[in-house]
Image (cartoon, rainbow, N blue to C red):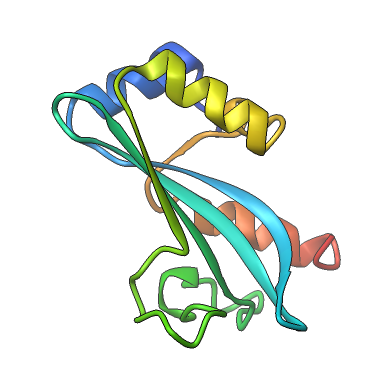
Length: 127
């Protein structure tokens, strides 16, 4: 079985190569609507940007494309994040993750692997 999560040095290297990393954060609720929360991180060249999404939870074992579920917030468009933050350096980014999403820095994955994380979430009964 292959290893899913990136070490911090691997995550920084992936970002510095212009690739995206992500983290599945679990269930969320917004205005009484149940959904899922996840984040995406990219390099800006001179820093990093975190985009946080709260989307509808519309998937099942055979449909895991959480990118297309749509936001819980009706004022947002399909690919709009609920929140974005920018950081000058990787260490500040990691400190933000741990302050706001404890353990997230240990669950970073390459882009698209987040669908496997979502699959595990469904298999656990959405907990």
